[in-house]
Figure (cartoon, rainbow, N blue to C red):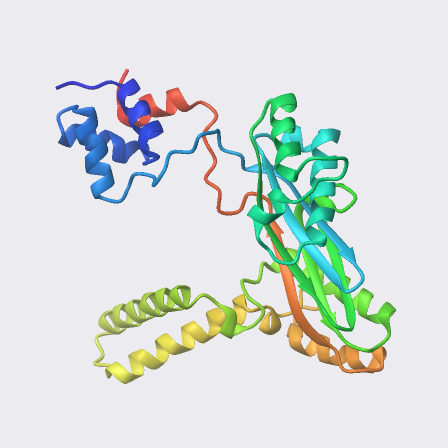
Length: 314
């Protein structure tokens, strides 16, 4: 049974699987569409549920601070053009303010919360989608706080006050001079925006990621040993892999990263050194770094042409 570029396109839209996987599934099932759907599901390539709306990977990250508490919220739109819209910016700003009063980082609870002026956040979002004409989503939020100290906000590539492409919050616990803490927090926030740490310390790094790095490092050590022609004991190879993982963790954990401002001092030492000027010990308790659209697979601009080209069909 023959199939066309339209069949590949429809299968992708139905399942959410990649184009080449869809083409292969249709080839293996002789063009039987439903059989191809089942094949992709069996292989785990089909999406669990097809999205009911278009991909929203642009938008804005909003940050807000009140006293010793801060929150970051990501709200997505389909295009960067909408992110420049005053109505959209006002929605992100007010939704972030609503999030600041939330008791948890539950996005569903945030969407059900009362919106300034009446209705809920979801009600306002629905109205925005209808009036602006693009899909929009409140994607995620994270709160940080200290019992005494400061929470310092920073926005990189700002579109407006406290709104931008990258939103950062730094939570510093200390009874020390607040002006000193604010200045320190701003510098660390700029470092975070640039260095993209994945956790506060090594213990917070994803264990699956570390295990994957260990396997890669071990395979590399074995390969290098084979090329050298030397017989290297397994325990030595394992130690080399452990060393590679330790370096990876050091580079990815905020407290062990080298401060971008001087390219030599670990962030943990930068924080410790600030105690003298602050007049009290300082602890970097937590941080947030939200980068707009990270982890969202964006759709191509000319989908039909890409399908035809990738599938080799006219």
